[in-house]
Length: 480
Image 1 (cartoon, rainbow, N blue to C red):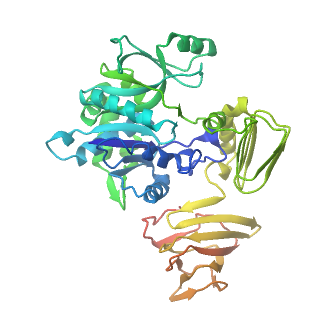
Image 2 (cartoon, rainbow, N blue to C red; image 1 turned 135 degrees about the horizontal axis):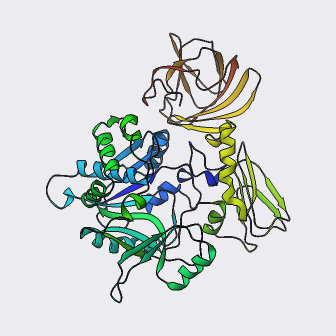
Image 3 (cartoon, rainbow, N blue to C red; image 1 turned 90 degrees about the horizontal axis):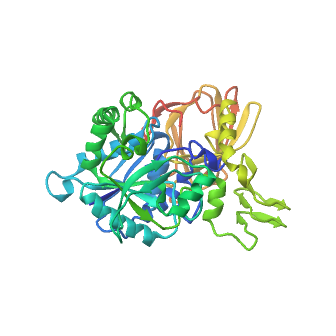
């Protein structure tokens, strides 16, 4: 069987303000109808003998990842939760160990083939991608460690490169001669003209046993730390939690550096499939079909004499006049304006916001929870107003607050309210009051979304003023 391993870590800071630490780009529908994670999973359909995927993600994203799998009717073989980021080599290691431990003993499936795919890539030609996977699979079955090298169509300075070695005429698999860091423009032009270089895609394929052998030999510290983490992992609902002590002790390294640049079993399969890692706003602009003026306009956008721009509105009208080669991105709580040739500097802007303690680096104004979402629509001295959207059948935790009271008004749907020792229903246009220090809970017993306006008042309104007593999502002691 072929097991897709989806690497869904990372924060995608260069696509701020859409991508944020707790809602990164791989969980957003940036290209196509589905999110990037969902599109990554979808393109594996059509490959023969594919098993349910293994997803490796940050524990803060676990409910979002699980919900996006549920939306597509997919059951993951495992969702491995990283308590802290440690780059791609440890992520591959724990996924391979999980695949081996779940495999049946004996038979062909005892050592499955893993297809490692970052969740934040765009591939336009799915058939070409699947054809490359079929070629890589044969090499992987023979014990080789496969990477996919993107056939370059321009002298790109933002990617690392792979130089292929000599091979027989008509070969579809090449030995790896060299990995090369991001070049300057003149060197990138030489690479393009030579025909010997590919962009390094960060996608891999190998037998689980083969990659674990190479990790044990070439990166023993990573192997040992990951083995200890997997051994001490605990099951939590639909997730497998890797412990912070063991996994946090693992060295942070990319799979390229830790294994592929050192192994003697590495090969590269050319991939010409309209690939992009969507690592910046300019790259996203190129990944989406533009209009006659070279503009990509998403949402409520009005333009006059605008050319070569990416304009994205999420909550209100964005109007632009006389712009050329710019990026304008509007969200409910932030607006980015930048020349396209400066979009790489967005990362520095996010770092500055983080140093200043701004929440906009990690959260959107609308925050998603396993039960639904809340949107902070207004706030001032000693008050805050939120719109709560609660899924059918969902239940918030039984909780209390020490510093704030809450007023709830049902806008649509039906709510079952617990307030102290009382349990009662609220219909549309009905309301209730939760005093400070009183245990309370909201449930949606109906079959449609429940919408509530919540007015908080008190001396402290932070999300950490919460004491949970019961929670069906296992969040006791957490502020999420």
